[in-house]
Image 1 (cartoon, one colour):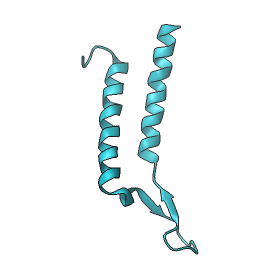
Image 2 (image 1 turned 90 degrees about the horizontal axis):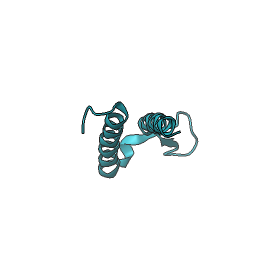
Image 3 (image 1 turned 30 degrees about the horizontal axis):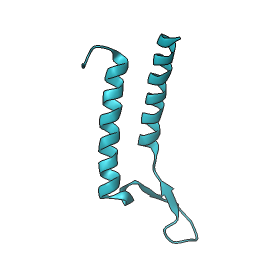
Amino acid sequence: RPGEHPAGDDLERIARVLAALREQVVSDPLEFWQPQAGAAAPGAGRPDTRRYDREARGLDEVRREIEAVLA
C-alpha cells in the first residue's frame, strides 16, 4: 500500500521508472545511443545508461535498508 513504508514507495517508483525506460528502449533503442565524438568508425559510441544506473543505485539502497531491518 502506498505510504505504508518508504522502501515500498521507493520500489514502486523504481518499478514505474524502469517500465517507462523499457518502453522507450523497445520503441526507439537509438534514443539511448550516444555517439563518440571524433571516432574513426562510423556509428561509434555507446548506450547512455545513466537513468538505468540511477535506478540501480536506488534499488541497492532499498536492498540495504531491507537487509538492515532483517538483520
